[in-house]
Length: 205
Image 1 (cartoon, rainbow, N blue to C red):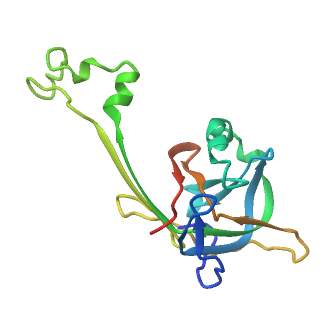
Image 2 (tube, one colour):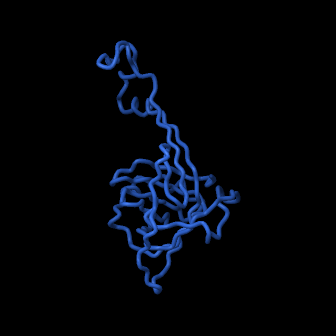
């Protein structure tokens, strides 16, 4: 679950823009509290949404316009490496669509590009400590993610959850609006390790 509570009851938006003139119906969740917030030049903004018990968090990288996702893609490595210490504590009103994402990665191709080739060759692979005449044909990673007001649910159906603790906010603080109504990039970080990076261009459940 998330460290700070989201709700769907006060959501005002119902559309997510997939392109300049196209949109889909989406369910939005809303939170208004203190978050770590960072503005990346004039191109994008980045927000940390923490999981319960400091397990890690989800970072949303939102291009400033619908047309700038490709430009953000070009500098995503630099954005990923921005330290949370460089963020500012801000009073943020978030409207974030619920969404699902599925990914199937062919790790054989990835490993071969990294130089791991003998493992996949029947005549060369030596896995005799496991079994005779054994080699690897393929390695795939299949991931399913679901993001909603409760938190992040993974393939294992083991949600990383929020709680209901809300930090004290001064009424005079300026509110930063973080309205996620068009394509964005997100990444999941656990104990300072990025474990997943995804792009949402169609926010539907």
